[in-house]
Image (cartoon, rainbow, N blue to C red; front, side, top):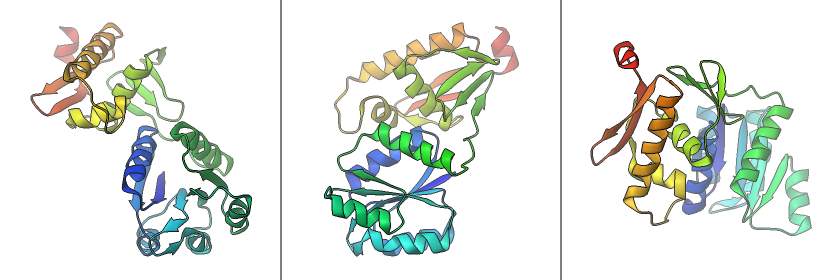
Length: 230
């Protein structure tokens, strides 16, 4: 399930993409109407997040093309315009919903999920590694089929690592997920978070292990049989 983000503001686009990826969806970002047209030719999308004020014109003019190229696509308008008439224009042009900047990212994800469910979107497949299964739609974890509770920070960290299982995830990427982009954090804070998550996974016999990649970040992988028995 893939989402198209049409937004020219780089900082906002980065935050939106990060949150969408954390929710388990794939996302492609373009910054102009022209690039959006190219993306629609190359990929199928379940939903589009469409800014109105783009460098090459009003994003509202893309709605008809989106509907023509991919009739089942859901469209959410993202804009700083908050006048009632502007909202009406977007909805009457064919948008399904409207978010006025600044908007809450968690609310955005809730609306995305609601629209995809409403219009027959398929559930996101869980991420499975070892005995652990992460439901990306419900953001719940089970181990050997039994529910397992994690704190908010543990869940964010676990989800970020699992989405790139068997690959090194940089400390910068992990800090951004935990604390937000641009926020200064103490280096030992992430180390402590990872240490606590390691202990929790061991206690729950999750069958996975987090390894350090010196000066780079961390990697999560499935334990080998002899490691699990040790």
